[in-house]
Image (cartoon, rainbow, N blue to C red; front, side, top):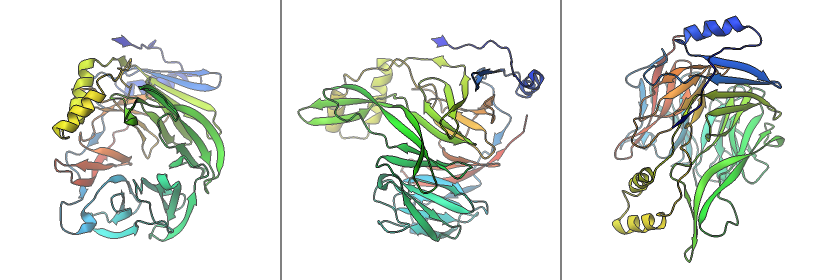
Length: 405
């Protein structure tokens, strides 16, 4: 097992004393901050596994939306995203019906916007609406990635406009404070690959104007690894069991782009210049054949015996990667803090999330509810989706109490 190490010395060009004060508030966690050719580099100590940040998430949700049967408005299916509006309403991107479903602060259904179709304010047949979130002013944006478009609604659900993204492969990711938008290409395996083997393509990112016209190209970055089987049945791509992932997220007035190969978060300005690098100590672990066998057995456990045997035979030669991903998902909260999920290692408990302040200094780990897929982190809440054993989906709001260092 290899471990990256820090020097343990805090260097801050502007005021060294302020760094020491911040570290005391973080129970001795150390951050090394330095400048390299105009790029701020933050090297962070890894928090001890048993420690936790002094913030608290409630033991039970304050709001749970969703039902197994009854009023169809509460029967959620393929929830892709959710957002809380300033007045307390919850907007749910329910891709199963192609709608934005709106609920009040008590969980009562108020309205459904959109629907299936190709008309203004409507959504396509697959994974749409994909995302929902605030748009400058009091409007709301919802994306339809496979139709290459995003729709804007006012706070009352009136459709204002739909814009089509300029490139046929781009999808909508997020809105920047200056009103520009972050776009990224859709994931795909490498076209033209011949023969069976592992491939890794690239995703491209760009900043666009509010109408979708490209403004600044941000370059290409590694996508996930895929195992391609090319035989007499044709070409079939499979995600590698422990594949790495591309990362793209708006972080204040910066844009996080990269992958989780290393524990390194790279943030760029909207003109594409690298502005900040945030690193954290990380234990590098390599997957074993036993890890892969266990993963595949679980992946196909619900298939028929014949389907399972066929899949396992096809994937028996899937290569192992050199290392597990360094982390999982990345989110930002309403205060500009960065939340980075630990990678879910085989056989390990639900991962914690490491919280970094807006400058990139580690604050400590947090434990959101283990079965909650996080969508949004607000000033005093976290919002996400849960699914029970029979697949019933619910959108839940949990109270968050912050105790500032």
